[in-house]
Length: 206
Image (cartoon, rainbow, N blue to C red):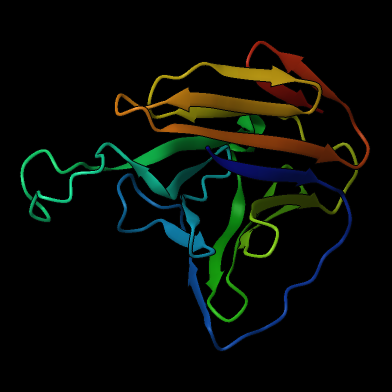
């Protein structure tokens, strides 16, 4: 079974940004679809990051998730060969951040790190997202320059309508496609200060 782990880290402290010649930057969030979202990955799994301050969406994929099966006599690309599938969406919901200024999102192709920065209600916020190859995890790091700055929730939206479970500081999906392929993915939330609370299938933080 293929397993995928996400780590969401919520911290509060002052950060700085290193200048780089290998940075793509944008002054607004990505529109729906694939063309404007920022990609990250480690060769096995990846995500498309849309960068909305009030509701971050990371569309997640993994290399082995598909609807086909062993069929050596079938021509490649023929009917019924199978389709590549996405896992679903990792959502970070921050409704109080809808009003924001000084927005900027970037992709540093040298470090393979995507960032989202903005100011809301006088607080400076930053997200850093990357996929680590040796550890096989994707990391979403949320920081701010003031304490008690984050209130919201984290959830997983599975593309295959599998059950989502939350317990302690984790949200997980354990599912199976119609071809029998089993898969699992999980998010683990770690915070510095504040509190975490499970509410149904989501984790609330403040």
